[in-house]
Image (cartoon, rainbow, N blue to C red):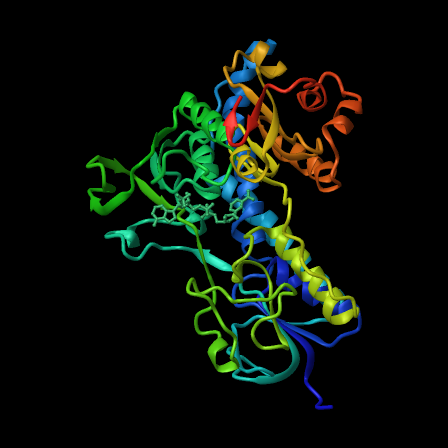
Length: 461
Ligand code: NDP
């Protein structure tokens, strides 16, 4: 048996990397982990966590407005962007410290450096030039915003990375894309008082979500004052005075302070020595893995956004735990990518699990669709026009709930809980037998007794 410097070496200190390193080290394995930027990765440093803090910050403008309906007189309010950034940075530094502490407590060796593969069992630490030999390697280098290099003027645009560190809050912003990041940031910037326009190439934002929610959110965002341009893309960006001049495919000309591109993310696989080690990547540059997260080289695994699977933090963590079971607990475990609950932290929020109506209609001959659209209780006094939408998709043949879709406050929290009965295969009758919690919005999910409509062979009846 050859002897190695490390049992496991992890490249990348994000959600998947830190979890696999920490748990392996706690099992007594000799583990090294290298990160070139900051421990915590995209989610903690410049993704989910700071984004959610920004979402909270941006909701106050509506809270202040809503307060009047409940008898409050709110004095003059103002917002200080620098204070928010400072507070956010402090919290992110605290979390990064916790990530390091977890690794340290488990006795993993932490390296603050970029690392590259030399061959299938050798890793080079770039800061010192040191090479280490390794039995098993995990590549968990994540992804980065697609900079859209073909766009003239792309270098003048920001991505979500920069949005977390802007010196000043812009007065106006144009955000390109119709996915999670574009939609979430459009609502954040609007809530903070920025004149916001979203430009999206397709017919409706959030292409992978249920049509009802996409339309409902689009309407709610426009109602707030967010301008949404569909069927259009940015064609060029140039400097105009202190702002940016933008031309679109549909020949619109806009002048804004800031242009943000949120056009998907690219896996970080360049200059990692993957080729030298024999690790295959696909035509998108993502590492190809089998169902156990193993790459084309048997002792090298890849987890999270660097692979072409589902780009979500809990998925990367789950893949890491499956890796541990498979490699260190003699219990081969495939990550389960079915029925992943997810939320878009738009305002109103989207929470969803399972099949959309459109997907379900392609898969099953007959569906029952239970749908409720209503004004949430708080809006009766606040006077806000927002409507909540709740939808359950039921396979008529076995009564299983195969999709749940919510637009409205706390939809993300509801999606997490709905993920359990739907994963467990509960039927609509199980939902009907469940007592409501009153008065809540979510009680609607257990009180929709008869179908709003049916879909038979793809047709609404
Ligand atoms: P998404 O894949 O969600 O969205 C990318 C958007 O860019 C889509 O609207 C896509 O259009 C559009 N697009 C892609 N290429 C082009 C192009 N060449 N020209 C014009 N438009 C284009 O990616 P995001 O960048 O928003 O987010 C990355 C990932 O991060 C997400 O997939 C998600 O998994 C994760 N994330 C999760 C969050 C959460 O859980 N709340 C929050 C933020 C990110 P089309 O739809 O037509 O393909």
